[in-house]
Image (tube, rainbow, N blue to C red; front, side):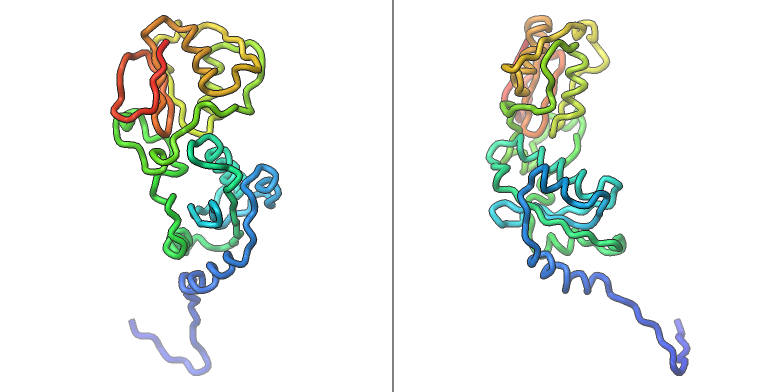
Length: 247
């Protein structure tokens, strides 16, 4: 395309990608990391968006970005809960850095920072959503193999008292920091009973036992996969699993 030369006039186009590659990593390196705790994450100004890093022993493990209304707080609190319920991970060693960037949608900042830092948890399955029932028989993601879910950690959102089994299942599915999938269509009459939650039943294992003990014997099972838990009326062994607990 022919561009007319006009005396005293020209156009300047800022190379955002080049500017980010040059300036963003040194800026992040100069930022002090904070422990990945509820208090620290909640101190971030609300609805701020940009890029963030998760660090373990000062090593960058994951690079993420957020451009949602929940901002950094929503995303980092999810990650904080996620790492608490995994084997081979010490939450006390996890830190974060978050950098608000008002305008960045036209630049692939994640790729820039992943290329710069390495970030082994990216593309390893960390923070992934439920892949669906058809994936339950496939090989787990690398992150899940290295850091399988831990069902013996206490759950701080569980209240003591009487609760229906179905309500407890819904609560667990909504609040757990990993996927919990259970039978929602068939055999609902068999789930029509109450359980008593006490101070001695505060872990996922203990809550699952409460539910399984109220179900017909030997026909229901919960399978602890590496990255999620499933509860169905079945008697089946999956190719990749940590543990099976039957009613």
